[in-house]
Length: 402
Image 1 (tube, rainbow, N blue to C red):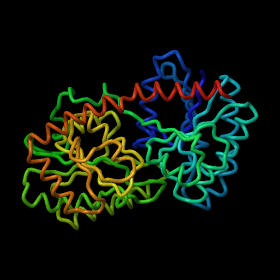
Image 2 (cartoon, one colour):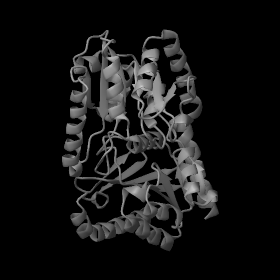
Image 3 (cartoon, rainbow, N blue to C red):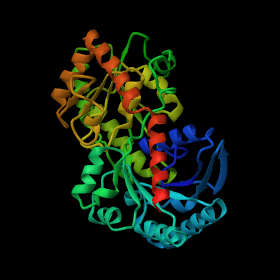
Image 4 (cartoon, rainbow, N blue to C red):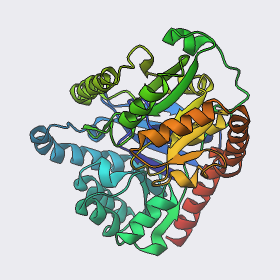
């Protein structure tokens, strides 16, 4: 089966759950011969093509759109046509059997979805929409509900349920968790002093870790990701836990969003200063391949989001043997069972978050319980090889029906 995966995100350009999924997909597929994978990804650089084992990647600037609305209106028609031509070229040269569109409802203007349907429809190629995010506007809902998708694959039951309540056909909905590479993120990885040395910490210092984007489509999402709430909780905790440090690992921005990224960074630094924790808070940009070691250096992982479609970072932390704290929203409770393999807290409640952090940090027995059950949870439910195998099998069934 020849599969084309199209994404307005790229692991070469930024860091996040979608990007980690794309990287896992490449690592899973590059040495397999049961499917031929073709990927059309956004790039801010020159158009190019590369081969990674059995995966062919097309980096194409038609998926890179300016955030300035005036510039966008001028360029969208031109870039959408270039995108459509590139898709048709890939289909014709590689006998594509099925196409997976990643987050098209929010990641690209509607013209891209419409042109993709026209191009695929003329070739009788089924289209799968993969949802990594909730549909938040009427237009986004229409793109999910009204176009002729063969399947709508959601990253969590929470996303699938949200789609159903907003009008999606129940027979088209499915759930496919993203999964984690347990060979890369695992508790057997030896902790080194590299990360603590990089941060200027002593070996005995303890780390609260969070990892998140601070921008989404040019919008500052510090509050939505719970970063401000976490800083407030840490400010209280650090007054009596003197060896404690907060590490905020943030995803880098694309070049086109550099001004917005700098503004978000300035706001983040202001909140840190406002809460008097600048001497023990470390904001760092890590590469994707550094993250396994970053998790291993942490004593607890926290992401107190106000909403979260899934939470890739939680399963990465669990696989690394790190106790986790999340919020009882979105897809997070599908990963964390409160007081069983981690803690769930109420969003925007810094006092509750402080109490749960203190409990984990000072209860060795609880730490070991959460570590052990977290690792078991990942291996049983979120191993990326198992998840991708099942996902590709579902794509095979769609092509048979078509």
